[in-house]
Length: 233
Image (cartoon, rainbow, N blue to C red; front, side, top):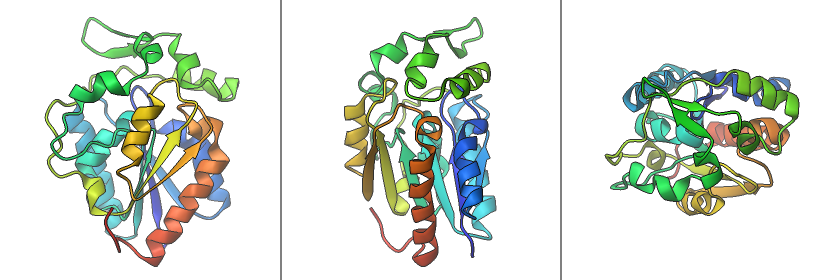
């Protein structure tokens, strides 16, 4: 069966950001689909991932890709996927409080580029554009910044008791020029994955390194077909 690569975006974004990678997968004959997280709560985001994986996995192998914050709902709701790919993404261990690690996770330059509105939603300021997309094509950075969404989801305090990524092989993508997430924090996550790769790009390789990312995902899709869930990390 042909695999599906299922994409989960990060904070304040939507599934549109994966478009450059989806276009390349189309040309290569690999199926891909991006979901939109509700960003109303962490529980709602995890439920959206859980339902998307459940629906897709009924008929084909699933490679589940998470970016940044998206690693948290994927860790909580991604059981049933055949492969996991974390792109500069949170990848919590059992017993680990994600919120307790936040000061070590985020780059100070990014933490200074967002505010909280009167309703408690996190909104990005204009300065976040340069931090998120420092190595990306300017026209894509401009389009993306126009689509930023308020985010009411919060990084959970409670540990994810049974991380989904521990149920199947995982690959971690470290973004070596990231100004949003500390590179050393990404490397610590990468050490727990089955495999890892570093790309010399900003926090948004779906814009700054789509060819490299698409090629990696094609390899993951091929592995999912050859040996679905044949090993654990």
